[in-house]
Length: 534
Image 1 (cartoon, rainbow, N blue to C red):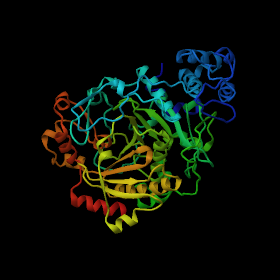
Image 2: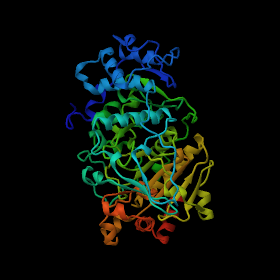
Image 3: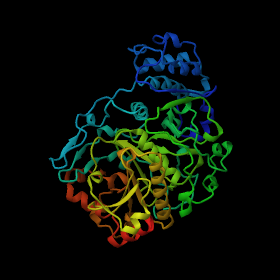
């Protein structure tokens, strides 16, 4: 049994790596193993199993008829793994085969991908939340691993049992009653009144998460920039540009001084332009690959996708860039680019990526994004936009990237439009623009939420002052009593409610009023526009 005290990522990361030479292989849609059933795997080493899995000469029927438990049992017997490495090592080896074979099968599918916003209040059943079978390799891997953790009881509550309905009206706000998140979520250990706060290793951070919470690694390969992801103990992933001053031993130590190793502070405008555009990125059609074996020194601080043990909805995950660098919850150009790549390679319009700054309902001061699967069009995705002022708009555009203001939404905000299937230049230009805007808001102590949708083609940014208004007792009592924290997904249109009475009575007017309380005033928004985009 894993212990919540003795099995953190930092303590076990190096110990959990598989030995051998670095090998890579591509996903295929078949079942790539040249041996029939499990008999051919007996006595094989992990690297040999991975090599067998990479073979393209196999028949798609090689592993037919074997369920996941049989695959796991067979690999545990086949791979002579040291006993002291524990069940997580074995699980990772099992995942290497089962996910290379793409054995993910959704539990159910929904024929309707979005509800009609003008229809009567529409309940959403758990069967509607499972994704369709046409998933990218990354999404299939993440969701199958997420489901495995859910089946194992790792979550604090069963999110599939949370009632959800679409509120009638023009916007299609989605209300969910999630009493478990209200009562069982980890208590916040940080102050909510400052956007820029130093790293504090004594508080909860993702280096203290269980290794069983790690689903996949997600990073770019050195040189070609192809997206690489796989089971964490079976993957060696290379960073495009290792951060200066971070040796492998320093990263593994996870010292509190990690965040100071960068040459510039993420709370300064200059930090936003620290990333260079010289690295070559692969196109969106690049073939995703697993890479087995030990990490090189440049990947000693992996970017991990973890399960969110207090999920909002199906497949709720956390993307933690360079987890062992121990970076506070502050966005830079590099971090934004990581989030954009993640959204692009998810390749599913119903998996959105979100970010909350401190002061805008982030509850952990460790750099991370969130994402989950919701097969509905969200309210913010329906809104129209308007140009920024001419001078500001010109300064904020370039390389096919355009910045506009939301025209008619409850929360004033911006949308950065990258265009359809943005190329690498557009991705880098957008990351630079967004990173600079975020650095300026961080320096001005202006909380904000960021929402990446349409597979990275649009990025919404909402500056907000709700927490400050709470502290100043400027929020109406009836709104405070709901206990709703208007973070990124709430602002986007997915309202996570804590009380049954609010869920039962919620309508579009109520949802609009709740979100209006988050928005900057018109004058504040003009100032924010000048701050971010001039």
